[in-house]
Amino acid sequence: MNPTQVPDQPITDVVLIGAGIMSATLGMMLKELQPNLSITVIERLDVAAAESSDAWNNAGTGHSAFCELNYTPERADGSIDISKAISIAESFEVSKQFWAFLAQKYDVQEMSRFVNHIPHLSFVWGEQNVDFLRRRHAALVQSPLFKGMTYTEDPQELQRWIPLVMEGRDPGQRVAGTCMELGTDVNFGSITRGMFTLLQQKDQVNFYFNHEVDSLRKKEGGYWSVWSRNLQTGEILKVRARFVFIGAGGGSLPLLEKSGIPEGRGFGGFPVSGQWLKCVNPAVIARHHAKVYGKAAVGSPPMSVPHLDTRMINGQRELLFGPYAGFTTKFLKRGSFMDLPLSIKLSNMKPMIMAGLKNIPLTRYLIDQVRQSPEDRLVALREYLPEARAEDWQLEIAGQRVQVIKKHEKEGGVLEFGTEVVSAADGSIAALLGASPGASTAVSIMVGLIQRCFPEQAAQATWQEHWRHMIPSFGQSLHDNPALLAAVRTHTHAVLGLDVEPVGQS
Image 1 (spheres, rainbow, N blue to C red):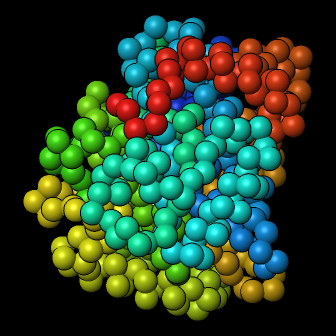
Image 2: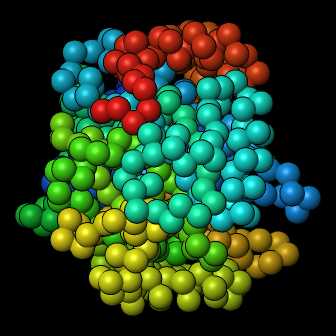
Image 3: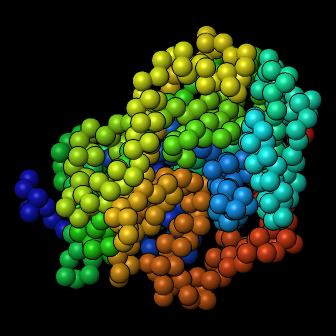
């Protein structure tokens, strides 16, 4: 059938492109705020959460800034900037409140097992790094969000916390660590599928899997026409929508460009791939129960911060190390090698060139990572696990990340490592670009998006009441209100079953 002959579908209130954590969060939140909204979900793969939201693809689970050293940079004067860490930690508490609300309201199996208690530790060695970690800890514990974080330079204490990391280590090496007992591990694939299961049970919600969006056009009537193609049958689907959200992970940039909105001009993407070493020895897995983050190599992207990571996936404890960075021109793990070349337009060519020239060390770093041999990867692992054996680990491919490149008045173009919400002036379409910290702050990101794109409704008393029901701390600072923070943590941990155990015990 010729696309021009495809009949118009009834107008839907919301189209969600991409069935990942962001779309699931937005769809679920909008349905709670206004149950009669009609929603259409379009996903190019045959299942939800199969790209960046999948547990094996996600470069970080449960980001809360407890242990990620790149969220607390050192200023020129030697002081530690904790502003980003506070923002991320607060956003993660907001996410936990929303998840607790859903878990309490609905009886869905996956909603009760996606989050688990896993202590978060930072571990460093060398005089300079030890000094940095000590100052970082002193700065962070001034905030109630990080109350309870402990610091030690005692090898025996570290042996109790992380025995595998300390065994076989040079006793003369200067080491230090911090531990936050409140750390968690989150399976974002599970929570995403859980939310979509809830959405499927609601009225006026339609799902179209195996459908790839080919074009988006704004029509004179104020609605968007979204054309997608069934990848199995070739059949064309045309959906008309009052609001469109592009939450397609690495695939968001090409779709934003197709929308033609002026706010999307000048954005580019820099894809970074990753690999894990996955432990296949149950005895080794059983002896480690923590997320241990170190310092990233100079010139490496934030997603490449090395960590020895305990995760709960499909009910089983797993142990990963990495990620090892790489480069490909694909924007998605199951994307095309033409993704990067086809994303280059006249509007973003200059920002991409300028950002590339300013990040030559990063390019060299990625090339070195791609050229690594199994022996090289084992050497990196042994910095964290001195007695690691090659036969206990196998290489796994992680997900794709597309870092944002945006226009900059003075520098021409800059490479960003956070997330960016781009929306049209009239609020009729929005796209999420970028990666870290991403999924962990999805709830806060979507709250901000709704307030930006649905300003009138968001200001109404009924929506405000719904916000506070879903997120008890809505509109309040947890950093500035220790009593409120303690109350919401007590509640969310009770609902989500996050019983805190002593460090080092399983």
